[in-house]
Amino acid sequence: MAKVVFREERCKGCYLCMDVCPKKIIVVAEDRMNAKGFRPVEVLKMDECLGCAMCATMCPDCVIEVFK
Amino acid sequence: MQQVFKRPDALCDVNLHYCPGCTHGIVHRLVAEVLDELGIEGKAIGVAPVGCSVFAYDYWNCDMQQAAHGRAPAVATGIKRVRPDNVVFTYQGDGDLASIGTAETVHAAMRGENITIIFINNAIYGMTGGQMAPTTLPGQVTQTSPYGRDPKTQGYPIRMSEMLSKTDGAAYIERVSVDSVKNINSAKKAIKKAFQTQLDGKGFSMVEVLSTCPTNWGKSPKEALEWLRENMMPYYPLGVYTDKTAENKAE
Ligand SMILES: Cc1ncc(C[n+]2csc(CCOP(=O)(O)OP(=O)(O)O)c2C)c(N)n1
Ligand code: SF4
Ligand code: SF4
Ligand code: SF4
Ligand SMILES: [Mg+2]
Image 1 (tube, each protein chain N blue to C red):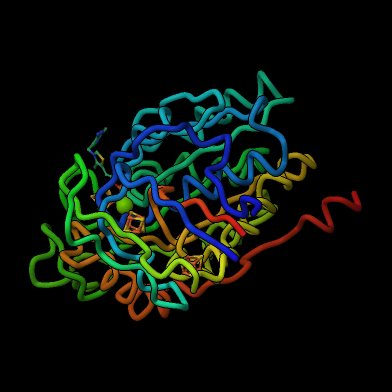
Image 2: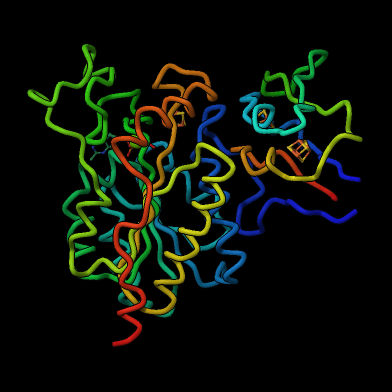
């Protein structure tokens, strides 16, 4: 079991995390924007998360915490 | 569940001002992780440059100093000489380090100053709006090379790691990239080794990091990483350019 937590207000919508996720479970949150005006990302199928932290390693803004 | 990835303590808990997808943020985090892992946050002193990373003094929890454009290695030299027990590093862009600050950089290496330089090569002047840098590639379009850099009139891009590796004072020089998870992990190892080189008193260390400037390259963050791989890596090959840490140890 693993999970990722996004500090959404810090997200700049660069979407580099989406690209490196081996499970391709990170998606754009189409229903909202953060205070900066970016559409943040979210994971809907958290049960598929590997806890590999590739997303967090790639994130330039330290938005992602990973638990395993 | 245990936390397997968290924000490093040495990275201030503030918003970074960089553009979306700018790799300056990745390198800031790597430096902070290394400060944490080596347990040197309390004795590190960083020197921020002029360039997009001018506000770096707000981003690391260690003591910070701000240098005039290009002068960070000279400022770091002064700090290190009066406070030899502190760990002194600079963080500089390519315009800062390889253009206006070339003299300071070369002579710091020549003197074998026991400092560490983190050199962000994004092949452009980011902060000022995308002018040609000494590191801009042949054919690369910038605000001041609108037809692409032509080496016949604008000279050839400067390879700092190769050049400084020929100086007697340089103890450790490596070029890395932050375009992929694998390369980010290697970049962190290099940064750690550079700081360790200083801790062991072995002399001048520099890590050149191939980075992106999506905004002034006119690309999406993802396209910028691809452009880095396809264009920067062939001209600026990754690797260790000098490593005298073993021999310096023997002395
Ligand atoms: C003495 C002086 N000359 C020129 C400038 C204008 N200037 C500010 S940043 C910069 C170049 C920054 O490029 P780089 O070092 O590559 O950093 P980047 O923004 O790309 O990270 C220049 C020329 C200045 N601030 N001071
Ligand atoms: S990499 Fe970070 S800033 Fe970029 S979209 Fe993902 S969480 Fe947001
Ligand atoms: S930890 Fe790995 S599997 Fe989970 S979201 Fe991040 S990249 Fe994807
Ligand atoms: S201008 Fe370029 S180098 Fe500066 S913050 Fe934006 S993307 Fe990064
Ligand atoms: Mg630059």
